[in-house]
Image (cartoon, rainbow, N blue to C red; front, side, top):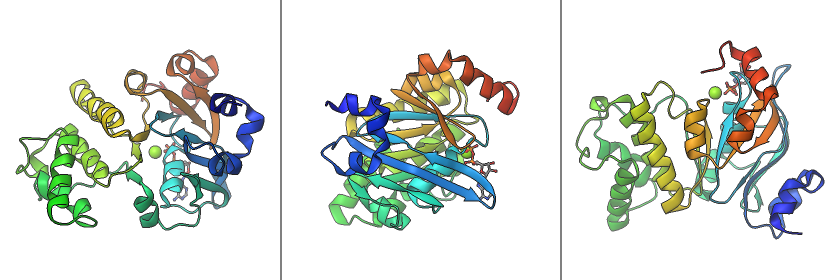
Length: 267
Ligand code: ADP
Ligand code: MG
């Protein structure tokens, strides 16, 4: 059976542990029946979610669908109530967040986290200096500035950057950790069309040139269509649909959950 058959056959896909640890080396991330409860509320409900190596996948769904929760479970910021998480052939469910970073998982959270008083270069130096010294440190800092698309802005304080450039800086900082998987929680929320274009270019270039796999949470279907290979729709903590954006966008059931979930569905 080919790798593609394994993905499309639900009976095979069920056995996440086998997939993640077997000879299918192209599955980078796989969650198996992942559950997260907050009190009596289930925010992630038996989620089987997979990302292939180098894949660019978008995660969409109405507010409260469990998107941020799923990514936080993957980084270890949240502990699952039940289920397992496999990464690069290993069960990482019980690893601390920093151990997951060391294995190649990096995340840009929804809340911006650049240091406004520090320059672009000083911001980028923060993640890099934790693991690189000397020439390697200098090289990685320059690479991260380039990945952020901020060459020429090295000495500018982050507070003087536009909102879009700050988001680019954060993506550069996350990429500086040399990840194989980069998780971005709403990187273009509140940005102008031009700023969105800048972020889309950062993401597609890191995907193509560095081979980084992405999971990007974003609602805007134009943006999603520009960057994504595949889309996963979450709804009420469950995987509701998966497929190419064209099929997802025109799916009446998907349109209905957006209408029911948050008014105009355009957010
Ligand atoms: P999304 O990112 O899709 O908008 P979230 O993953 O942030 O959704 O939240 C999913 C649901 O879980 C929401 O109903 C939210 O209120 C709830 N939730 C998220 N984090 C917590 C928490 N720390 N404690 C209690 N409830 C939470
Ligand atoms: Mg969220």
